[in-house]
Amino acid sequence: MNGPFEIFINQRPHQVMPGQTVAAALAIHADGVTRIAPDGRRCTPVCGMGICQECRVEINGAGQQLACQTLCAPGMQIRQAGHDTAPATAQPWAGAAPLPAALAQRHYQVVVIGAGPGGQAAALHAARALLPHGGTVALVDDNPAPGGQVWRGALQDAQGDAAARQSWQALQQLPNLDWYPACKVVRAQAASQRAADRHSLLLQSAAHAPADPQARLGAGQALELQCEKLILASGACEQLLPFPGWTLQGVSGLGGLQALAKGGWPVAGKRIALAGSGPLLLAVAATLRARGAHIVFIAEQCGWRQLAGFAAGLLATPGKLAQALRLGWPALRENWRSASYVLAAHGDAQGRLQSITIQAGQARYQIACDYLACGFGLLPNTRLAHTLDCALHEGAVWVNALQNTSQAGIWCVGEACGVGGMDKARIEGRIAGLAAAGDLAGAGAPALQKERLRWQGFAARLAQAFALRPEVLQLAQDDTLICRCEAVPLAALRPHHEWKSAKMQRRCGMGACQGLVCGSALQALNWPGAGTIEAQCREPLAPCRVETLAQQS
Image (cartoon, rainbow, N blue to C red; front, side, top):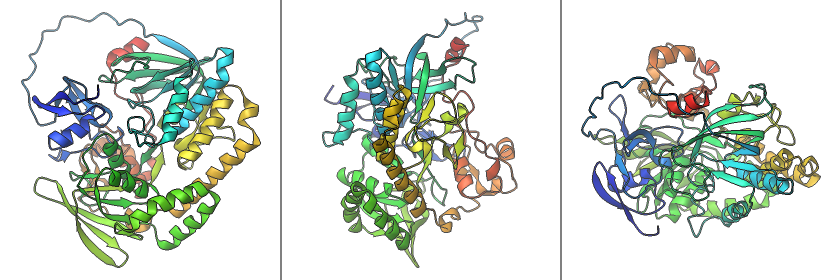
């Protein structure tokens, strides 16, 4: 389908274009609000990738659906929170339902979780190496299209990254590779955990996954994958830090707004301020600028001395140096400032963003804007690895030179084992794919290992240069919400010095995101109980039907 089609928002018809997410449709045709928080706050998407859970809406009668990860489909019925419909009529109990049939299983030599640049590289090289021997590979991602966050939308955009199209075209030509889009891992067990010779993954596909002739699992279906080798390419989450006004409509994560814009969120002509730290600031500015946004301010919290040192280190990676120059030059003309950060965001009576206060060196500015995107770097997404009992080191998954984790038969690549960008992820994916396919000589080739070390050096310089300044960790006030899901302010957490106590008595971390936003924020803020915040790895790892769990049992 190439032309517009009709959907219904709160029972009213609207025209949308193919490729637009439900979140984008709500922003274009409604007020963008997805749900009403316990404190009455009107919520809009924040992370753009299904972590914050702020984008939950009702779709075709099913609640708790993620608007930012769901593509619009003809005839789709969307209901925002707060828009009541006729209540369902209670039905008398008809007795216990029969037990569901056993869940279907499929077996693969290698399964790759995550279809970003690193995951695609791993799947490509594993499938190529296994093809002569009859081996099979499965590639799984929770997004409806491949690419992860870096290559999101590249296949639909004629001006998108050529490397993304080339990578996906190469994968499509492999007859021994199966594609599982819009699928979340609900349960995972390593072979050692289940006393078996295969790893086990329970998948649940999205109820409203778009039709994809290449997909091996239909919308709303479940399946158990078993594999001999498993490669994790689970990427990273954005570090979100609380400050006064960070819950206003129009305030989102930095990468979150980029992801939303790539899904059709309207930014043309909008006044947008960007704040945070790291190269992502420049990349997001370029994405928004290309879509017609007016960038009114870019606040980089890092100082000139650190930036100069990082820039000098780019001589070791000429490609990154060229990219920095290409992205940085336009930003310098858009009120880019170093040693700058957002003190507070200000809204109107309806909770919509109106302006922000910026601290830039010794000066303060009041800047009017329609959107503020604020992010303070990336955090490795280690949930699945932790569930599989893979060892962690300094907040990332520990791996050796061949990308093996501490668990036999499990590899990890990309941001999950250390934030370092696309080039690092791709070389690590290539090494892991070859190793998982049994080509240890190829995986250990000196040229690949040298390239791996080069990009890991870049990752180390990145982390050192963009370390957060103390001021951005002290912005939250007593009335600033820390837990967005359950509306828990900082003052309510001060008496507590353990995560368990904060959860049980204040419900902090008990909402839909299960502490992924507030838990990481409290750790960054050095909350007294930060050391007691356990990894969020309880099953099910993602919302699923009870029937799915019963089928596997």
